[in-house]
Length: 354
Image (cartoon, rainbow, N blue to C red):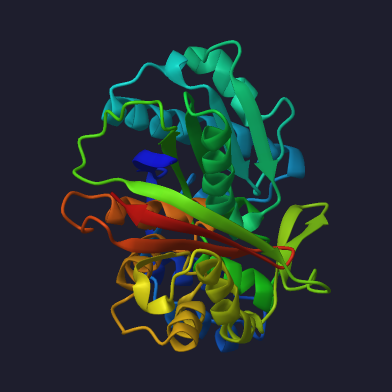
């Protein structure tokens, strides 16, 4: 049975308190008559701080798409190396022991892909299987864990690295719009990853229990392409976010999770832990309402959102990392890792700590 051996995360060096980010955006758009009416979006996000790859002066300056993407590549490589080195240290493994790498991102473009560039920096095994995944947005981290679990099921001697890096701040546009301000108030930069091992691999984790992957479920809903995604402009990526996302979550998530549980002869009452991508505060409220959860059931998701903002696909690794700490999760307890993304789509992973 696939196991998550260790999880690691990394953050870029610049930390912006939400109050400072609000003041920065207010000053940048001071010539727009509607700016004050839109400013409460920063307070309503209930985020205290976020991390970014650059300082305020850099974001105050216009950049070409080429400049933005070059910054994406350099920052992504730096954060990737930090996560990988942490994982190898935690698992006491050499980089050559990694048999496959699943690299996930949606906030920049790179060909050769980032995993190929990492190959030349870190010295992976030259026969490593490279599986870059692009375009799944916030759902990418959960999807990467699911695909890695499938890989080590088929290859029980394998060690698989799942790596997610998102530089969401590069989508900040110097034009005033509701969508742009929501993105400026909500998204942050970050990186996260995990090592998954197959049945024939002896774990080197120091943790008393590890999450075993029991099953996963991918769902794409028809005629929902406009719910979330990117619009490609001459200035880079411009975020598309429907205001109906919390309502969609409220209407769909219960049936979706129950479908996975029924396939495994489980009920909602069997689930002890929710490793839930927060999206935003309204999305968390929709999850609680749809699943009938206690107020503190999504506390780790809420804490990660408050301390880091929405970091797109890598956010789930920050949440999962909290569940991976010693003595946080009891043996034989069940959990669901979940995230939603463009498509509109859902990714679910059913886990049991053993």
